[in-house]
Length: 158
Image 1 (cartoon, rainbow, N blue to C red):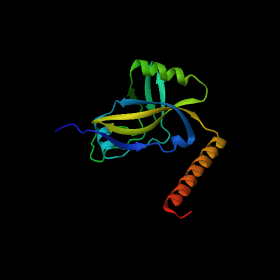
Image 2 (tube, rainbow, N blue to C red; image 1 turned 90 degrees about the horizontal axis):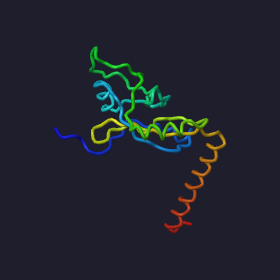
Image 3 (cartoon, one colour; image 1 turned 45 degrees about the horizontal axis):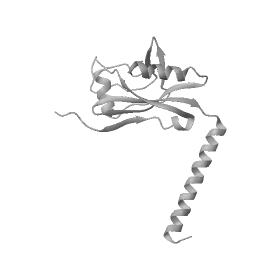
Image 4 (cartoon, one colour; image 1 turned 90 degrees about the vertical axis):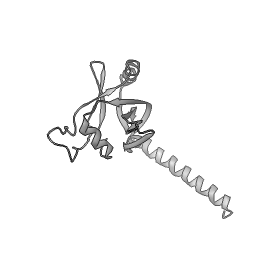
């Protein structure tokens, strides 16, 4: 059976872009068990409350919820276990240099399959203040209003 090609999104952290300013992104592989992969292929995962943490020069993902595989037996996995991430040493060192700043954290943005391999997109992020969120929402609304006006003008309705 040939390996699947392309990118298949499993789960995304939509609140991340609202709550955090993403400074940099990285792609990492994940060390998973068989039932975790089957559950992910079924499209079941949650990135709510998940975060990355460094320990002994390695990056681990805490709090990611992959529910138990329904057809699994005694070999089923722990839904919220700590998962090791696969990154190159240089990427880990760059990431850790950025994470040393105050208020900067590592959050997962998306989980997907890339050419058959389970991957996670990590974001080095800084938390937004409430006034930053309001400002972003106002900018987004202004852009939407401008595009509507341009669309009406192009149709000859303005």
